[in-house]
Image (cartoon, rainbow, N blue to C red):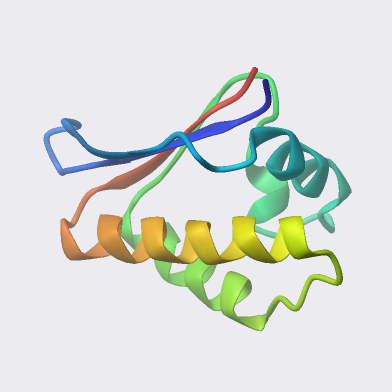
Length: 98
């Protein structure tokens, strides 16, 4: 199954579910991420939440990525949209690990 991604507003109400994110690709990317990276801080088997402060760093990190595989590029693009949506809502990006 992998990791699912949800955008929440500041009251933790779900705004948008990114169910089309390839959760298995995201899991693979998380497990291969460098130590200390925001991507590497996502827990593959539990919940992880990034607030609007953390999302600034996550967006910068994602923007700098250039993954070699098409499925990874799609995940990065989806995460960028989701993170930007969460920022606009002054909310959260919630990751649910499998």
